[in-house]
Image 1 (cartoon, rainbow, N blue to C red):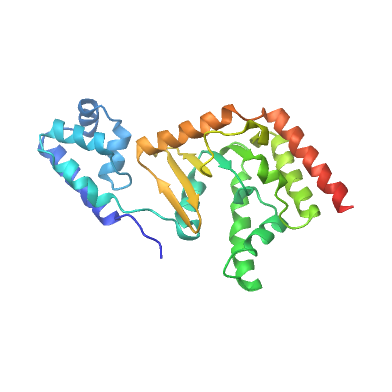
Image 2: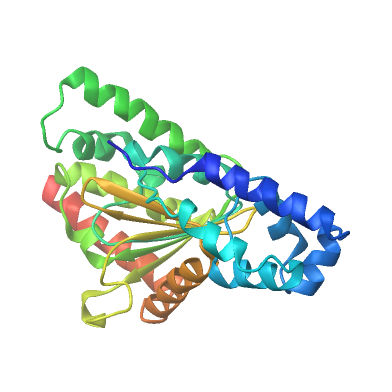
Length: 274
């Protein structure tokens, strides 16, 4: 069972902020200037779409003279956000204008070929029937359509070398999958970087992360573990995830060298298939 945050509490938080702001005779723009927060962020908090972090709450209390009310109210919003079946992160993915992702063991879903995705979805535990697998496969393949528009989202993918070397399905499946990635990279639809094994320890060793930016919403980060996934909206946590990604990217091969490695590994699979 997924454990969600409390959207009702977040809505009430926003309503309370709006009422107290208006009681103080301030517009959103005036409050944003005094609290050193963006106008957009305040608008989203009031609408219940985003939650403030502790520093935001402290500044709101200070400007509005609310005696610590917004800091004390903050814990009511703290429920874990675990995205069962990737539902929440999938919705963000559809809205994103920029996606940067680190994949350490598997090709990200929106880049998977049908044969590769079929192998991945059929390998979980407990075992799935063919019908259950094919239903998930349909959803997985639907995600690939976010790449139909050449300009948006802008996509950078950082692969651990294990993604290339881990043989999912047959050599033919891997050859096709890596060829697909190489083609997307060669046509400049995505930017690709590979963290080679020889890079050794790097900043993203703890696991995969997806960073997403939007037209009119603050960025979010999505991290995964076994049977769990969590969307982070707290600006401080999102910034930390961005820094991890950037540091790991600094240890990766260039786009050109990464494509060369991907093609080379694909050729190895092709020879093995023959």
